Length: 234
Image 1 (cartoon, rainbow, N blue to C red):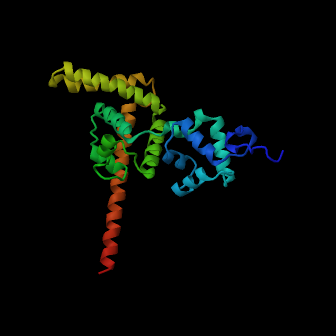
Image 2: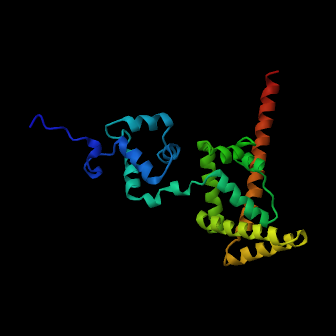
């Protein structure tokens, strides 16, 4: 009996043992999440995440273990599905804003996330992930848009896709004199299709106009503060 092989705890039914580091890895795979996503979901710093994966024993923090246990049972509710790439966020915004006559450049978009002007181009070309802070900010901004529009992001994205297709078709078939009139008609049809709710076009225009003002003001205040501190040092 004493020579019987010890059963590997990783291979034991998860219901018969506490949550261990291997469970964090398995949940990540099942969700299709990145390590950064998991660190955000579990409120872990990178070093803590790496250490937890290597630890063969139970996850040290009981709250973290309970979050993982909840994720195992409710994968369809884990907000990883709501984490949108900055490229998609920009393209959806650009399409809806263009119908509303509001222009959002790539530089303005990056500025609105507190990133350098070339960040979007880098994310698009290299496929690099944004910083955790930028990802979280995108998540929060989209939540505000969903609340104001009464629509979830999947529906918003679908509308944007259809609008983009219509705009591309108009660019191919209409002359310049008719394109602006077409955009107005398209905006009106979008408003009507919302069935009495705030139109997505109006929501996006109002959201981006207000958010860019907030960002600009914060940048100005930071610049003023730095100038004040610099003058004190003289």
